[in-house]
Length: 259
Length: 272
Image (cartoon, rainbow over all chains, first blue to last red; front, top):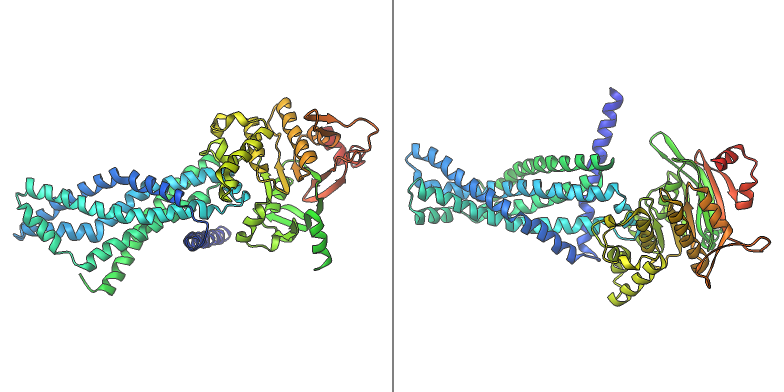
């Protein structure tokens, strides 16, 4: 028992160390040549454009249900007109970034883990190293850059679509004035809210790409290993995103002032 | 410069007292050998005797626990990963399962290294065609690896390894799992590479007949095929054998020496 516990502890520490080295090297590669603009563009297309439908749908329904739920509570205090503000604050500060990231994690962390995992178990990663090309530079860095960049814009889009979803509920079900909804939604936002809402996707994008690539590159044991890596990547990325979200939210609240 | 590193300069590959273990299992135990420039060394041994590991160590894909490895005058064991990429561009490796990039067509697979080195496109195309013609695969430029047979994949892998005219070639069981006819085609390619381009090579194989074919044939440029060396010819095939057992070198020598070896283990191995 003691033996297996030590082994487990050793393995965990090793995993954290390897993940940290991978993260560091994939970022440090940005500072030197060669860079792979074509690969970055291709990944932007896969991650950004490919995630559009899922992000739009998620954002829309989240905004809509948020309006519905908050109206239910607000009506008890006779504050139904605050619906726009509540939807806007929740979407921009929290739900837009987090839900978009979770969706993209489900889609792309798994994609990266299975793609790089298949390459790992079929020795294509070793072949790339043997051909004198750094797989971290060629495979991980473009995915990292593309995810961080595209998640930023996907989040903005998700926020907007979420507000639109909320406005649909507000006007069709709650019979609120649309003009009032949008004005209050807009005016309640301060720079601190927007800053918080847009720094998060950059951090989450980093998590999605590095976790996905880490599990892919450390895949072992044939197709079964690739399957395991894929599942683990999604689970780890999702939990990591939610945990970092809590820490970052608290930290930014302290730094930027309350509310 | 010390005597050993000068010695290392003169050789293509040098292993000095190299040891490696994976967890509790000893893979290499103080292995030493040298590969001369232009020579071919055939690595023999039962499955799991560390043959593939030797190739990966030569490329710096793995690191030994102790000992020194010098390739083309550079001490691989003392280099960092970032420095190794430069050296690896001078070495070609053919992986056992070919390890072609399955999302790229044959053409881009072979061109991979040239693209990385930013060689002009016209030159890349010409060199890729040349390499594919060498392995007689010039008609499959646009095909994907999944569309090729095992033997064809192996040939494309050879083309990918030789396209940049490497100084050392590492072949990992290039004939494993192939039918005898295709195997002979592959061996002929290795002989051609050895005799026409004088490339140094380490060859891992399970098939003894392939190793003996390499030692007893030469490439006739005029006939454009492999020909058996006639008896009585004073001809050096530059092909030697290294038999591994328990992570150590059990035997080192040429074809005649291994055939006449008195070691029971080798006799048994040869009979297989």
